[in-house]
Amino acid sequence: MKVSYYPGCSLHATGKEYDLSVKAVSSALDIDLQEVDDWSCCGASSAHMTNFKLSVALPARSLIAAEKNPGDVMVPCAACFNRLKTAQHHLRRDESLKKEVEEIVGGTFHDTVEIRHPLDIFYNDIGTDTIRDKVQKKLAGLKPVSYYGCLLLRPPEICQLDNYENPVIMDNLLNSIGAESMPWSYKTDCCGGSLTLGKTDVVVRLVDKLMTMAREAGANCLVTACPVCFANLDMRASENVRLPTFYFTEILALALGLEGPESWFRSHNTDPRPLLKSLNLL
Amino acid sequence: MATFLEEVNEKINGVPIQACYHCRKCTAGCPVAFAMEHNPNKIIKMIQMGMRDEVLNSSTIWLCASCETCVTRCPNNVDIARMMDVLREIAIESKVPVKEKRILKFHEAFLSNIKSGGRINEPMMLVNYKLRSGDYFSDMAMGMSMFMKGKIKLISPRTKDMKSVRAIFKSTGA
Ligand code: SF4
Ligand code: SF4
Ligand code: SF4
Ligand code: SF4
Image (tube, rainbow over all chains, first blue to last red):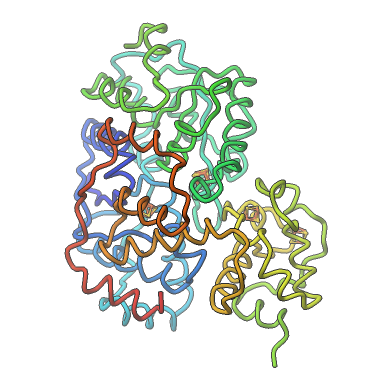
């Protein structure tokens, strides 16, 4: 299947393991990715927190560019996903805003592509049966908690990904490759996101709470689907509570026997290799 | 002249905030309420009472992480997350002293980085943030370690058609 690809800035920098693992898994699942031509940043929280029109116009520029490619657009970063979906929502709902933004951006928004997260594409288009059949190494002993965070699910009428208080698609994907996803009630709690630089102490407190609760649930690692969540979990947790964190695509790649996981794990701040070695998974 | 309440409602352009009946569900689920000067629902009350300066000067509007938990759970669909965006916009426009300067400096550094390259270049953005905020030393060790792991690159691909990006910033007044 052909899908266009909006990596966003993070995936070309601190989230490079996510970029590489999304591409590796997509190719193993016969998903043909074509990068959106000359995309620009979505503006993230800094745009919508300070300038509404900018927060619609920046994503609109990239959405219009994505309309040139065949298929829907895959957006792996939860923050980009949320900003693009929100901009699309406003452009659909408000005709005069749409006109104004089209003028600002210098292009026409035809509304022909759906904005989709790889969790959705892997789960709903490929399916757990197909993925289970391709598993080379069952991830026995790996007990992750799935961490969805805020921006994949809220607000639900915009994101429309999964149940917003108890999402399950990441859990089901992880179970289909032999891991044992642990139930917990912090799947959609916030990690503090962009406050990480301006207000680090708040983020440390939120991340430590998540780690503590993951331990209480019996987990030995956390799995995320967002580079912002990943950066906070991987780097901000206090030493006495921290657990390794993975992108869900890294874990999929490991189970599918693809090239790359070991080198991606090397660049994590909290090294997951000792855990994987103790489980004979590396 | 419009009251503060009318000004905020007009910018929100959705459910008027006086639909709130102060059940405090928003505050109960807010991940950063513990650090806020005034709880989210209290801000609504303060706006209704016309306490413009107190609201715009408060740390609350900058600490909100935009996690959208409040609006998702509110029985009256009051969009507190959007309200916080609006309050930040008004605070910037009316040039009131900002309580959480570093958070605003972060947003400014972030946006100016997009304005100059179309995409975020993390080291440039960090340097810019540090110059603006005066917060020179935190995270230095972490930055070095990410640099060594090849996660931070000094040069990263930019958007080619920068003219269109600059035009967006110009016409949105950003
Ligand atoms: S969310 Fe972050 S990384 Fe993604 S495009 Fe927007 S700013 Fe860049
Ligand atoms: S969990 Fe954290 S990083 Fe992830 S979406 Fe929420 S605030 Fe953003
Ligand atoms: S949840 Fe809604 S109604 Fe309840 S206090 Fe908050 S804003 Fe008001
Ligand atoms: S959006 Fe802001 S106010 Fe609402 S719950 Fe999240 S942090 Fe609190």
